[in-house]
Length: 316
Length: 316
Image (tube, rainbow over all chains, first blue to last red; front, side, top):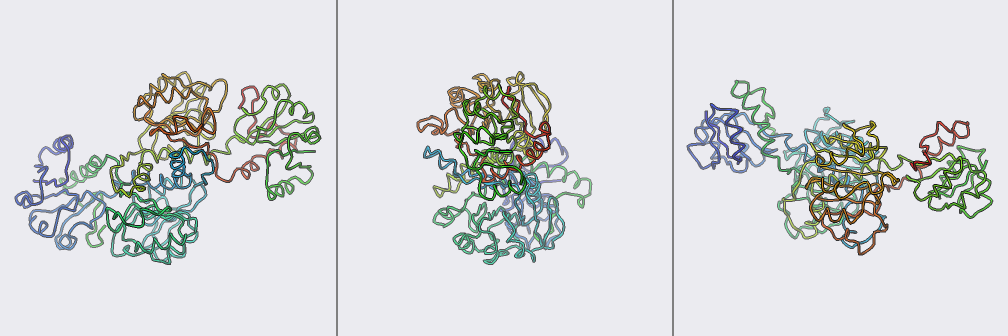
């Protein structure tokens, strides 16, 4: 059985895979225009962006597509949906670094770290950095899945009450309360932190409108670690200029890299993070931690038991 | 009974105290040179720095000294020790803001926030901020008391293994392992974070020497949120220049404010925090939260049950 790795791995990763699966023929270090490899492979492991509709059609033997990223938006979703493919992703792979980044930004904001760094650059000793406490706050988590849940678990340890918000309002781990997208506008005025880790789907694109930002506290911090198309950026810029929310920490943008002349760069109450919150140097190892058990289930003929199966119609 | 407040409180705090203790005669907004108030008061509430040896001697009626700060070092300790005074402090009042600050700095360091802020100032999009994970690290807490324990509790939530270090190695909350000061040097090479929240006492002054810094990892972060006399600052400067530890976050210094020409200001691997980690705008309220129950016990003739009693010989 051929397994095609479009996802680049290092020598020691290849070694690990060959040892785990001596009977599998791994095709490492290939490009998607390798027609022979594409046609014979039953399994393709990819970051996603390198496959187009034609590739999917040429991959006659393909049965399982393992996407080593969080979402499917860079993949030809229609072509995938037309085939009866098993699709898995690496959902949850980011949860540790991303939740740590979310907490880092929330704590930095409340404990005045940016001001501390700025004062140091001027050799200025000034205790009045406006430090506040995180404890006793309310946080709304848009998308309380693997990442949002991990952020919620950590926030709870800091004495923060967590409100999870998803389409249906169905229960989620580490959320003290749940609400549905329909209840969002009503809940926003009580929130100190509004954190989105939502993927980009037809239901989340443009979910936040002017009135949502306008309903936030003038002390609230909005953090977007999901996708940039959750709102019109101009709406957020206007809202920040009007003081609701007080500040935003953005790891994702409509256009990435963020254009040099974009207003966000120069706004005092905006932190521009270069879509780096998921990076921690452990990505490939963690991807293989997800792939290997799934591959064992695949070989055992139990694909339905695999982790991170994706509903190809919903897109996540 | 007269209770002298050298500790400044606001109108609504005075109101709260009068309502709690209608039979107590509170002397608010006084200075220690108010000889009459000093002589008649059974209880004095002070920040500490305003009382000298002569004041203590003149305070003939004084039985309980409530110090609204963490340590006694600003007080005339010998004069206090000569009298049979009950002394309490506000130990633990700082635990929430300080533990939040400690976590903020640890997370900021590992998740690259300073680099993110610097890049933003240049409108530079660069994902290579060197982000690492906190999870899976080892942290040594010098002084695992109220503040150290709270930091330990939070670090454990992040999947960090905590090692408490005190004089005797006696057990402390939220520490996975314990060691005594004698075992410190041996433990340091395994630590990713070394956090001191030690008070200044004869046993802690100069506790960390060249060899301690030299024993730290070249990736370790040293954080001092206790007192600046834990080491000779020049030893720490040399150690940082030699790359062990990799970085330091300092909230306390030998001389405060830190002199303008001090090398720490300009060192890339040092964060100078202006002794601000305990500030969060809730100090007086929290002090009264500690004082009021103690005052009730004092009036009930149960001073031995009071919280935060200080051993005046040890100084904490």
